[in-house]
Amino acid sequence: MPPAPAAAVGQAPLARRLLAEFLGTALLVAVVVGSGIAAQQLSPHDIGLQLLENSTATVFGLAVLILMFGPVSGAHFNPAVSLADAIVGRRAGTGLPVRDVAAYTIAQCAGGIGGALLADAMFATGAHLSTKHRATGGHLLGEVVATAGLILLIFALARTRRGVLSAPAVGAYIGAAYWFTSSTSFANPAVTVGRMFSDTFAGIAPASAPAFIGMQILGAAAGLAAVLALYPDAADSADDVIVPHAPAVNGVSVRR
Image 1: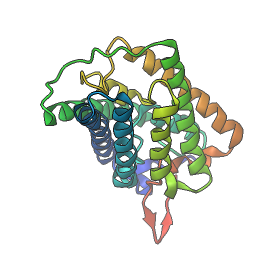
Image 2: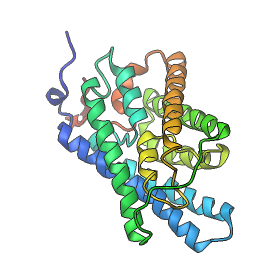
Image 3: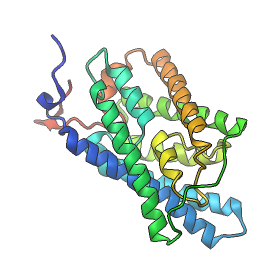
Image 4: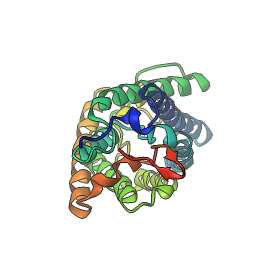
């Protein structure tokens, strides 16, 4: 029997999920860019302290946003995660429907741009394209590593039924990757697009963005390969990426 369509199992309507992805990604980029601007203003002569302030705000902000929007859309906030979820779940009829990936991506990228412009407005820095070039060989390798680790973490938590830990675990991973990767772990095409629109500490020059996004997709593919090697039945839990978002009926989570 073919899998039931999303609406038949009580998943939130697509419009509501897209709104959650737009708002979640917008607020995530606002946290990243806004805390970067604040760090630059508060600690103008200490880049290490700026990075600590920026990464700490991102850790807590991301965890809160996953808790806030996860029950509606899964809290992907990341086209690489949405694409990986669709690929993994396709054969089992779980995860994000393939037909929804483009819509998620558009909502996430639009949210990323909106979040950067919001941060620029809050700190009155003006909306300018970034001039901060980042696309060195080391930075690009860092994006492969950061994104691969993120994908592996997310699917491992879903497969082992530890989705309740996703918010703190994903936040902690991104916070750690700020420091152990040379790129400071963008690991997200939508966030990369958004950060082009802020010529501040957290920005990335438009000329550097395509290479970053390409390496993020490559990293997602590497992470997905690791997931399928370690958890061959990962498709069965794709509905739990990043957190379970199929509504419960009589206390039981509904699945496709």
